[in-house]
Amino acid sequence: MKSIREIFKKTPSLLDEPEVMQLLDYCEQLQDEIVEFKFQKTNNKELAMLDMIKEVIKGCNAIEKEQMEHDRFGFEAPDYQETISNLKRYILKRCEDEKIWL
Image (cartoon, rainbow, N blue to C red; front, top):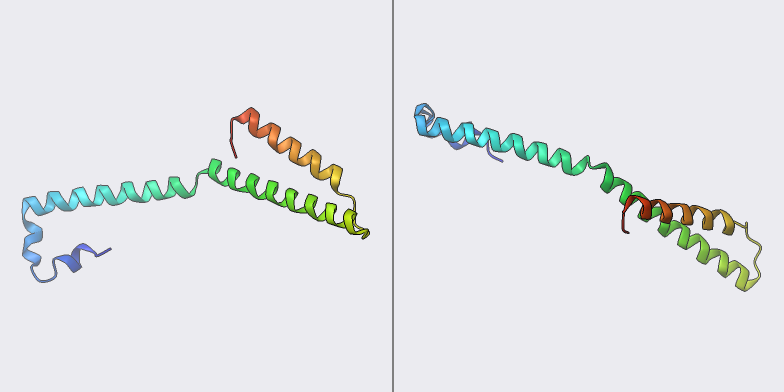
């Protein structure tokens, strides 16, 4: 984004015109609103929580799949099945209670 000085560098006398001053004030207000909107958008805890929950569910599904493969091929693997199932059940129930749809 260009600064005011860059825009009016060839004709700085225009900065003293009342209409230009009004326009500059308006632009400053819009810039403030844009900054606030960007902050709200990136600082939204609900979006962060949704993303985190999706990642946990994805990880749980991957570990469950890995566990099934270990069982299928007879490899010895740690038994995380019950822990994963409980965690997944808790997250899904909590999402249902909070009306968060994944």
